[in-house]
Length: 167
Image: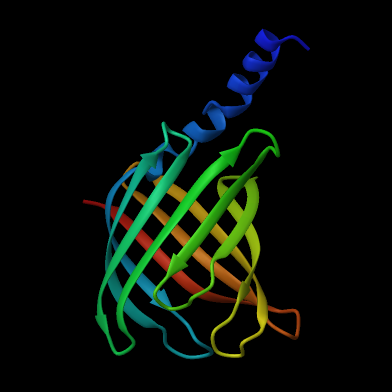
């Protein structure tokens, strides 16, 4: 392959495209209602302000969460979400003040939901758990995000629900 062909192949593989554009409805400033379950029973409910913006020329969605003060402290989180043209999969990395570990996930659209899966170092048992994250774009002004954790018994439990409403 000559140099011009190599440059063109690189340009095609590194440029945002239609799969990146599917993430456009997530861009904006959002107020959220977050429900967190640590087990059976009622969830902890908090509110968060979230900014999601394009980063690196439309290649990634940069997510910046700033929550209210709770009994567990004030919550902050950040993440990146994008589409890898080479692997043909969506990829995500997430970090927040409730852990020192990064959650790295990969996945695809399953119907109308972006479904990502990865393993996370869990802060309570200090083990590794499987996490499935599901994002549903309800409208231009609303989307939801849920996390499901697979327990030692192989059963999945919803641990997080975040409802985003455009500001």
